[in-house]
Image (cartoon, rainbow, N blue to C red; front, side, top):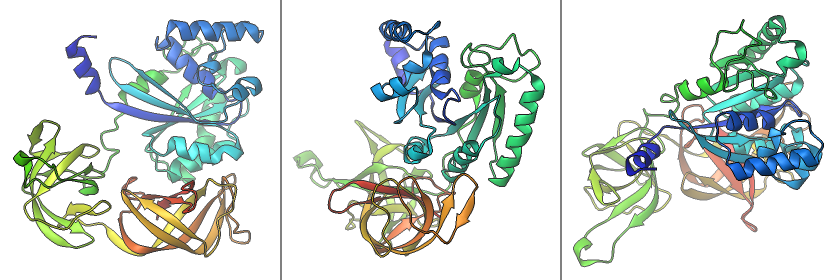
Length: 424
């Protein structure tokens, strides 16, 4: 790849998407087909998959083996852990999170979907909308994934019938209305044979929409990030010990929301001191502005006591501050969440201690009902809780900003991640 091509590749837009669907709906096969037909599988990897397919007695290449990397996954024919795959087309770069369909791996799905711009929801054309479809759609809406592509798979097993497709589409639209899903699009596919995955299907000429890859390449994600509320969590204070940088004091981090420009009036939290941005520095260069998700070092006009965990925000646009936080929590650990239990909490770059004040309900992710009788939140459960932190945190609701609206709960003794929370 030439130097020009390398630079162009680095500057290409990145789309993160996750797959969701019931067991045997064909998620891994779909991703394998997507990579295979877009020529994104290396020859040696393809040869290994062909050998494994022959060893298993398959008549054709088993493309599910592209992502099912664990031995247990290959033996059982299921996805157990999140598998990440990277590929690119001339239009966009992609990171795929192939997540499990089993209810006992809900935490894995939450992990894989937490940073996704888009979710590909698979539905078996023979079975239609199931409880698992409701569960995966609920998690996608809970995590505020902006776009859903609903792929009605295995259309080859229903004779590519348009009536079947239209019925499932109508059934899912009822689910999306209940969950307030704003952008859901539908594609009839056969992942096994490649119909409407990368290339248009000759068997479904009644479908005039784009293929899956065409949608992935073209869907607009520029409005997915919060560009309105300037948020800059400080990750590190830079004080070079060199004579030429004797007075340099910079605050390094990644913009969690909005844009900052040189000269902007900003407020430093928690101190509440107001100042202005004097420079925005990148590696070997100084710029005039920084956009959301960019990593830079910010210098301020005034010398202020700032450390890791503080946040620089727009003076006229500040986040909420509180020690009492209302959360939706997904629990990852085998030990149940303890009422009045004490844990560590990480929010952006800020770490505080926290106590669980109350458990309001546990969500039945299959029926979408709130269970107020059994409030014990165990591994893979999702519930609503109230917590109190030892120090204030500076946050936006998760629906407004997925970065400043999310937290993780940690075991203070082992540093193990116990749960992931979305601030309401």
